[in-house]
Image 1: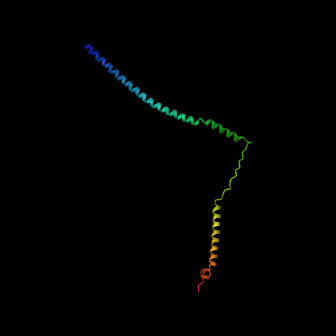
Image 2: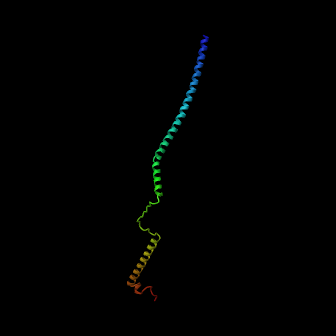
Image 3: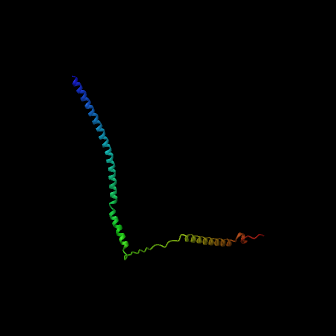
Length: 135
């Protein structure tokens, strides 16, 4: 009976050791899986970024071809293009205020003459003329 008890203790110790080893192995696998999930997330973001870059640069070959065509056309010596545009004559912004000031001065002078003529026709101050004479 003693041998059976010793065998049971040895078996229990073996199962405990096996349990601890499997527990440690499980924790390592879970840690690896967690780190691999983070790597997968980073790779997914990188993939999405590369796809957007691919979409934005997919039209560049056509653009580069058109730039090359434009450069080739610019280098052709015989073909020149002259463009003439009918546009309104530009307004000299320094002359406009001077003209307005001259018009204003002429208007003031005209109004002064009209007022002086009206005053003279009305008889001046008490028909004595202007400026009034001291007696």
